[in-house]
Image (tube, rainbow, N blue to C red):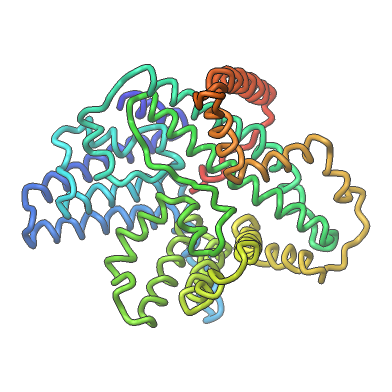
Length: 448
């Protein structure tokens, strides 16, 4: 807990006191809910504390966004503009808020008891491996581990291996494909060609996956080093055959949070079809807004909600009857097109990239042709990224490690283990070289 506080102070500064006060309020409220369990007073205390958490998130994260949009309305009505709030965003506030709500709700549902001491509460809400960018760990999943967890060499070495893989994902794949992606999305619309746009979107599609799954691997690895077992956050989402399956594989802890704390309380799948469609749309509207205070994120979320509704209306059943390639192509196309809204700074910028992807742009001459970006390094990373976003490597690893000899015994397990260890050392050394050179970009999800 002390290490987590120091970690937050490193970049959180004065906001550390805000977070500590919030931990104190949530901890006291959880103890009160636990003591009052089953009563109306417990429900009222839960509602009040959840509201306080959401108001705090809205103030810090969405104050400027709401003011901007209100000023547009007021300007149209001839009314003077409201002053723009000058608020900094506490790091990790979105994840902190979701963890706080999970803590309160799980205690109220009696899925786990409240922490009796401040250290346990602070450790859950502020634990540094997953504080800034997840995975989102629901309280009932980890409550027992806060009290007691195993510490052994096997768990620690497993954590080290997982951490190295995540670090390599971030620095050796996401960090390299980020350069052409950033360059393409920064190009003036008049210079965007179809080739530029598709290159930028392909690079960003790999960047966000390896950036975020890399961070999740690092967080899960650090958790193992301390004896914690965190839930998995990704399961090869780009091999999905539908948008519904994509969300069962992408940022799985966020999907589970929205399912358990919003979608199911709204009625889930138990209501009439029209209400189910409305629930899906609302959940993904809020999912988009959670990612950022911008209409681009809102559109991204609404588009995913729209395709989930369409699939539920019959497209999903049709896709299941088609060859796997049809579902893969459909899903990957939808995901890549919607990533444009996720990455673009404005709706106009997203529209320009989409128009170029569709061949509707009128690209002016530019010295930076697509071939200029396609260096041997980028081509190698693109191939590695495409392979790494599928389960080819773990399947091959498993088969090699258990290849049988004449008597059926695994004869390649030891050589494979040695080769894997050498590869991990090489990945760590290369990654640290990238760090020393400063050739890396911030994690994408640090903004949220």
